Length: 454
Image (cartoon, rainbow, N blue to C red):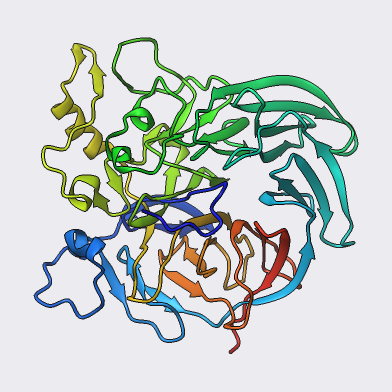
């Protein structure tokens, strides 16, 4: 099971196979699979944790100097110089999310407040409060997203009735001058309040707000068989458009019914963070016991399954836990009726989209990576950072940059004397002073500079 590092409100894990995206005319195009390392090894020449023994042939190892070794998907991996924490801003509360808009950062506090931080003037002001929340475990105020064209914004939170809720507000000249418009989404949340997700974005592709919903399932052995993330009549384990998009969603359930038309992605465990870039959706999903993953979906092909609980990272759940006669109690409906559990599992396995990047929890005997926190993309032409997707591990505080054009990975460790934080979100900043900013559970907004000169 995952170790607890102040993960009171968030438990992140994910699964993935290595794929890369080619870039043409500075924009990403279709994905192409990279062949993974499937050769049976006569001799393991690196530390192999007992948890990894069943899946050793799914894992690729890279020895690194000045970085923790890499263990995960088949990638070209490079250790970069440590990043610099160049500025810290104290936040009176618990930051759990961050939204960028017009050179301003919107800091979401778990306790029910949102602050607007002006990067240039360094002014920080309270612009929103939500009092009617449940603030225990992962519950609380969770996210904000802004649609500047319609001058409205959405916030997500768990209300006092234990419901994941999205409210939409109209605003005038500034976000702080708002009026309530509508309640756009409600999903019952059960105890324990885990794997809620609740991240919001404004999607230019769909012209609507998208919300992520976790599987709301406790991290136990039964997670491997839990059908809700694959059930397309359920919101759990999904990324959903608030409006009907008339998407061609397969009917996967236990009882035939009208299927939903607004599911963008399914087969997710806890998609705490995701974002849109051009026609792609980049989704960070948290794993159970072995792997963390990042997925890239072509929105023209939505909806798609990301494989949970059949897969965790680059491995099947049945192999990870040595489960004989693995089965999920759910049926895939075709025109002539439902498939049985066995045929459903075969089809769902074949249709699962492979992650682009995943890493393992146990790269060395002494080190432990725990949960992937996303994420954002650099869009700086004529820069070494252009089209690099940024994420960070919650416990090691390593920053991962996945190159969208090459599929290569760069790891930036923190300085050895840097304080360790429980990081809750990370975003790129395209100016000369900072490259990245992240929020920390300990009440910090931290600005980062990457170093390519040393």
